[in-house]
Length: 457
Image (cartoon, rainbow, N blue to C red):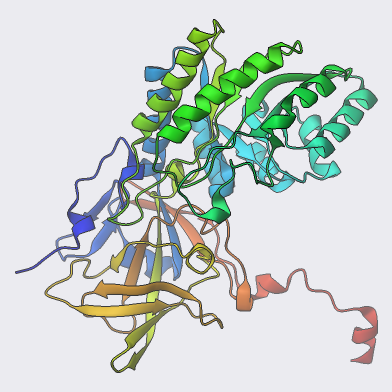
């Protein structure tokens, strides 16, 4: 009897894409081949080559709308979901999230410029970073983008700039609330030991210091407790802590009108993952803030959150072409693909797990073939899957890896001088390129030979 991969049998939730492994438009055609948004993946690879990033527009828009809908439902005050663009930054992504009414969080001049070129309104952009350069801060101030102050070094330079231009600057501060989450230590950013933000024990001194500046106006607080989080209690605690910090700031005359609770909601990469829905996450944080404000007789601040992974990850897939096979009897069979750690560094960096299937035969038909899927880079650790079960396959077949919309493209590299893949947007049976494939010649654009070497040759 034919058995499907179980994740392909699961009912797709169009209202909370983070709880799906596959994009919401995933289907199988009459020939048993995988389709996304009605588009033939085999056809896309014939036209655009592989490896290939593919983004599903409907999944992206559903994710954006789920946050807005939930905030409207559970938070009676004003709110603004802000896309954490580090997850996947492009002019297209900036344009899409802007068209859905979201703001954007950036951590460099490059991300700021990309947001502005994509049409995100200045007033809906926030600028993060634990070591902002003078140039970046000046770019943000010049473009009326709100800066989130991460440390005293930020504060000193913003005070200097505000005095030079003789203009008030509204700022937010980031602090570490000291909340621990069950997540990978490399992406835990809200504990006391963190490179990000002011320690909560330092806030009274900080509020006094800001009060003594001439032009800096503290208008908001930011805290973020981690990434790929499946627990709701830490975010419930976060809302309460942030409202208490508002009360502390009021003692120093600061009128806090914005609370930015960060992001961190997890997604379903594998069948073992069970993240809360977007609706549940927003309800938890909204209820916490509302309850705490009511308890302390405070007006509701503008509630901001910064989803990244939970907006874009499930919308993205990566397609690889199978090349070499290497069987080590009694140990494993290596199956090599035409990409790897340069287009997806997360397995070698975070030991991240994904789900995948063949494009031509996404179902396992009485198959017990187990493979180690290896990338083509000159690293023994360049392994995308340590062990995965696939139907019978051969060189030239295509593999689809799900959940690659976040931190694949944005963390990609040119290791081994391998060009970065193209990115294709699919919607209603149509496909358009949104990022061109690099060529080997592109990699030489910024190489320069010293004059003396040119003369010698």
